[in-house]
Length: 120
Image 1 (cartoon, rainbow, N blue to C red):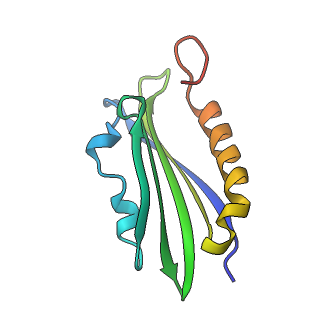
Image 2 (cartoon, rainbow, N blue to C red):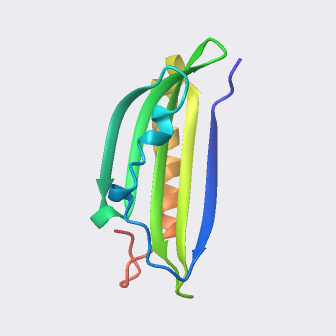
């Protein structure tokens, strides 16, 4: 049995320009999993946000994964990479998709603000 889950990671990259995620090849994260199928890949916000979705097998179960990566600079001048990963059994994905995207939007809204104080 696989329990649906969401994991959020934050990496402080120090005083460096933020990563341009379009140059990183973020879909490779899914491509390295067991029997992967990449369903979608997008890079938006001038390379600051990537979203990858796919399926793979783990211990005989087909799982569905969505990984969003956000690269940004904080008020301190440090660049950060934040990664939100949602995973469930593939058969349960449609039932959980709205909940996962709501969590993802809340993460996005609380992680980055534009100079006017609104999320992009």
